[in-house]
Amino acid sequence: MTTMTADRPAAGSVTGRAARPGPNFLTAPLAGRTWREQGYLALVLLLAPFAFTYTIFAVSFTASIAVTVVGLFVAGAVVLGARGWGAAYRSLARELLDLDVAAPTSYVRPRGFWRTIGSMLGDSTGWRALLFMFIAFPLSILSFVVSITFLATGLGGLTYWFWYRFLPLQLGSDGELHRGAQFGSSYFLDTPPRLALAALVGLGFVLCWPWITRMFTMLFGALTRGLLSPTRASLRVAELERSRTGTVDDADARLRSIERDLHDGTQARLVAVAMQLGEAREHLADGGDVEQAAELVDTAHSSTKEALVELRELARGIHPPALDSGLTVALETLAARSALPVNVDVDPAVEADGRLAPALESIAYFSVAELVTNAAKHARATGVYVLVEPLGDTSGSVRIRVRDDGRGGATVVSPDGSGLRSGLAGLAERVRSVDGTFDLSSPVGGPTVVTVILPTTSPADRA
Image 1 (cartoon, rainbow, N blue to C red):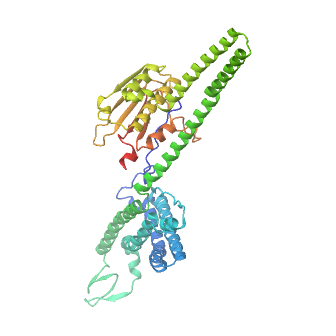
Image 2: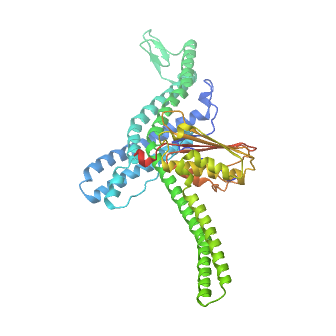
Image 3: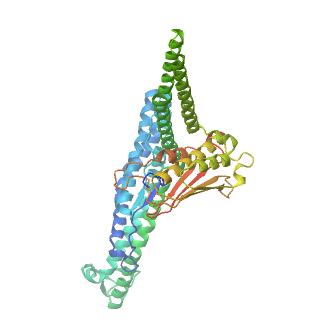
């Protein structure tokens, strides 16, 4: 079966790369990850003054020039420009910290001059990037100074035994000359035990340096995830826009299919009926053969009945009449007409007190119908099991599970890597358009299990 479709993975703000093994305490100072993190702190420090200046300029410029219309437009462009800074920081995190933060949804310019200005000035992604740059300025200074201090102190202590002899002589309180670092008035690091102590302290600083560095990069990672990733609201809007586009395309395809069926089938039959009745009328008007006219009327009568059957089939594809008696009756009718044995199990609670809205009942019915059809056409299945039940939580959602015993191997897109979506993509889009979920499990060899979860009310009713 190659035409099954599953829901796309939920768009998250952070996607993980293949996890690299973390260094242990003793090898961390030599690990490439540690030096990449130190490089990240250095690059962030280089960017920080420019980013902070841009932030201060954006805020002050927006406040000072907002009195003019042109100023509003320019100020909005400055706010949108912060998106570029956010992209730069995300790129640094991705390359040096292995933190892959998804980019926010692209800015879409609305129609109308004033709406455009309002959307530019109120762009939340831009303002969140500005807040990131404002916080990153002091944090980058603190993190780099502390990190590099630990590194420099550690390396200095480890090599002190070598370079201390080049220090100038100093007179101690004991009246003797000493060469070495001085602590207090008479404590000099110039004896073998004290040299060893300096090396030991330096080793401690070097071993602590990677973890101090990692602590600061984790802070930057949290800031990056919190301020430079897409918000849930923006992801939801983008998902709704995609599902709406898919739903519109699916509806357009259905309308074209209905138009084609009417034009090539029912309309052609009705034209033939009209011609047959016209020919019969001419025979009777001219006193022709009555039997021949009767044959023409019989043929027209048969064609009319066939046209009625086709119209009923088309109407059933738009809204099955069995749905008027409830989802249970509709699914049982569907099972009776299926080419495969279909076992339908509907929990009575699903239809209690009008549990599903009519539009959602229709989606549920057509979801099952299409899945059963695909099982019969492509899965080489010998039977299908359909279960409809409440989800069992406080959301009041309904779960629809369709399982066939076919050969499996269903995928969302073509396995050849072409990226082409399979035949049920429209069904998945339709489910998502009402805040539902569409999940596919189809290992090679089967079974294929499709789970659809629908809310009990449509988004319009909930609004």
